[in-house]
Amino acid sequence: MQVEKYSVNHHPIQTLLTWIESGEIAIPEIQRPFVWDASKVRDLIDSLYEGFPIGYLIAWRNPNVKLKDGSSSKGKRVLIDGQQRITAIMAAILEKHIVNKDYKRIKIIIAFHPKEKKFEVSNPAIENDKNWISNIATVLSPKCKTHKFVSDYCKENQITEEDEIDEIADNVEILRGIFNNHIGLIELNSDLAIETVSEIFIRINLTGATLSQADFAMSKIAANENYEGDKVRKCIDYFCHLAV
Image 1: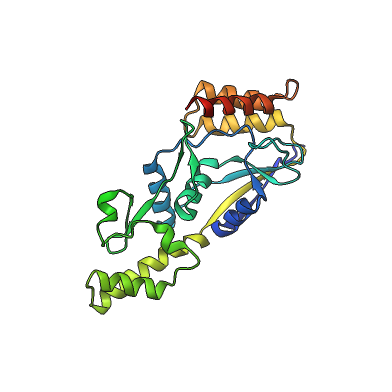
Image 2: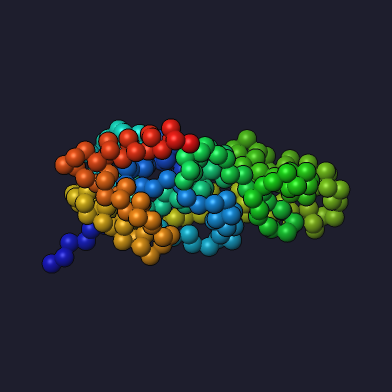
């Protein structure tokens, strides 16, 4: 009889972000750098706002997996698939810097138009347009008081009609509510071999964003335990940073 190799649970985005910030979920060596452009981050946030599903994350709890910083996972949930989505959410919501595919440290800022319910990648024109919330992270901060924020926004934009004020308040509340959206988390059995997990990662990505030959090579290198592949992968990353 075939033994099931995984279990499935659903968690709020707030819980997943807390786990990642505390180190409960970590990124392994077989994962790629952040390769999305800013428009894909915008579209992901829009999907969350609309309540659309954004796919499952896949994690593996194993005490011996090598992470991107060279340390061992020590029983943490290791993120096998979903790095791009989680990194995008952290960049837009928590204002985290990311290292892109060119090994440059950047920020991705997403803006929101609360009257039109529209998202865009922030730019100087949007920053100078008071109809836009130029950075959604300001609204999503725990320090933000929704009533005061909406009141200040409406005052600045000379909005006095009660229906319009209520609509803007509702749209801002929906934005703040994305923390409560649930994402499915598939947890692979802890006794799976690193080669099996690496193969799962590669097969999943064959049906998602296209992996380059370099991505395949880096995944295979990191998974090779005979020649300390995690250290070779880390060395390659290090020299890529130096080359920028």
